[in-house]
Length: 104
Image (cartoon, rainbow, N blue to C red; front, side):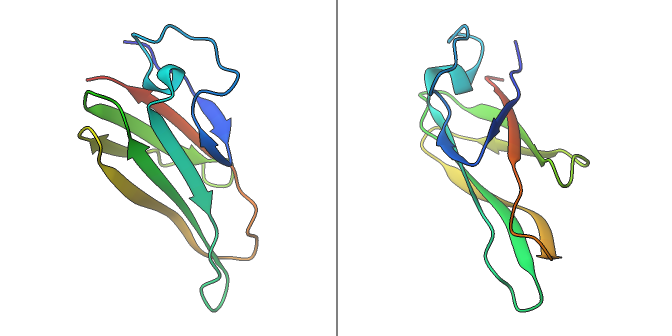
C-alpha cells in the first residue's frame, strides 16, 4: 500500500491533500499529528503526538527536518495515541514533523 510523506506542524492530516483514501490514512484525515517543543531546562524537546482516529490499525513512520534519521515507527490500534520523542535539549524550538502512514 502507498506511503505519502507530509510536512506538518500541528495538523489534522487531511487539509488540502488529494490522495487515494483507501491507500493512505493521512488522506482520509483519520490520523492526526501534533508537534510540540517544551522547554526542558537546558533546551527544547522535539515531540510529536500521533492519534489514530481510523477504523483500522495504522503503521506510521515519523521523522523531522532536524533529525531525518532515524525514522521512528509506531503501530497504533484504532482510537489509540502515542508520543514520539525526537530530540532533547535542542537549542531551537523550531522543527517540522514528517509522517508517512499506511494500513498494515
